Image (cartoon, rainbow, N blue to C red; front, side, top):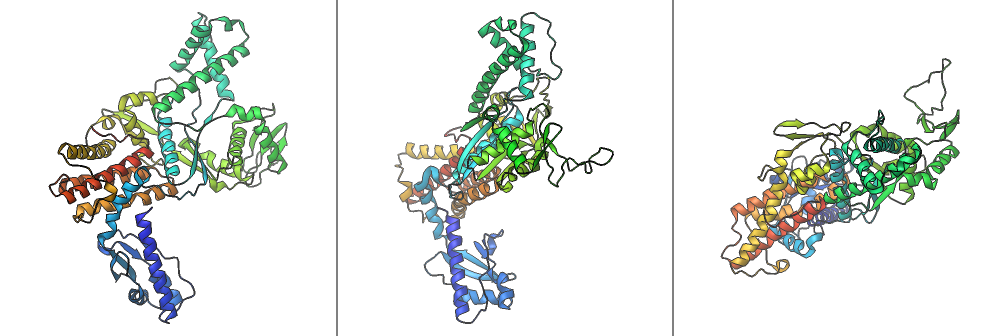
Length: 573
């Protein structure tokens, strides 16, 4: 249920009825009722809702907007609803002022719905896949993975709360050159542990975790692998590393509150023949062609490998992409195309990828690729994340993945805690570069945004415990009479609670979970203001019950949103 939407719909129906009546009585002449808006004015002095129907109708009716608004003002029936008064303002807006009676139903609704309060049916059961993190299993999870994990997981939770059928997926890059390079790196470390002077691959993985994996293998299986040929050693060691590193990634992500529905193997795409089948389909459809033993994808503007007399491409930007090399090995791009085709083949209505900003050049190519198989490219949505910088004591914490000296996700959780890590990463728009202040994240004061919100929840729990300690019996809050809540701070809190379903709807529609952090901050601020002006555990029994019920409703809303963000709602701090 959505209090604000219900009010808007009621006003909309009353305006439509008034327009129809005015037309039938000859006071207005028009062909069709325009798609007018019922909106909340920025300035509360302009009422609770404003309608722009008169301005949109002016051309059809051949009348001034204010004259049309004046006609509607006389025709709108306000009986049986919450409308207190209507006036005409500005260029012809109809401003609606409501009685406060509608607010008293809000806390009752929150208590009736409990953990489902704020949920909406925007998605109507449509299937959505959210793929995120998908880090190469060649190293440890880092800050980019941490941000992607928080955003992707929160987005998946949000969409499910908004009525979508959501599946969260991790794409395992367990095929290709990076896996061979991992095997070569492990083989070098393995032989070093056996006392050999092994030559480390120039582009190998230098992280200390690779040394640890080689040591673990030696401890578990001994040195007998040394007697095998190099290709066998590379295969065995890379398979061992994949299993170990994926297990460790799952462990760390679980610590971070992230659980995936599907772990999809790139290797399975190749082994099932789906990569080659997708490439064959592109060729059959006329989008790919063979050249010198390679298979190339024609560029969007018709590039087909044509060159000028000197052998150069006519348009360097109109570049054909290699899908299968002359040696018969598919490129990464070919595997990505097959993977995204497979996603849509599985029946998802929308596919969402959370990628690092360094992949921005890949977005248009992938959208075009899915369109070549007959799928709507607009149903592939890519959220690009900007870089993260860590600061401590005002100084930049340097990171270097190549040297192995970088802050891992597990390091971050140990440093600032689970809740702060999740909240800080999701509270900023992914489009914006992020400065993560480690000192702020660990602080226990109102400057820390997650502490500020969690403290509001803990304070409410403390108020309820105090009521019980004073000997008060907590009533059924869904049945409490809230009509005694006439203080403006009480009204502000009820209005903020009424906003939650609209915030969920907007955040889901825009794919912006960070909006929920802004809502939580406003809700916590509104509650703190209410608490500072209105004594909750007062002597008046009816007023006390209503204020306790309103406080508890605020706690329910805070917990519901924090849960979507993967953050705890503590009962004490």
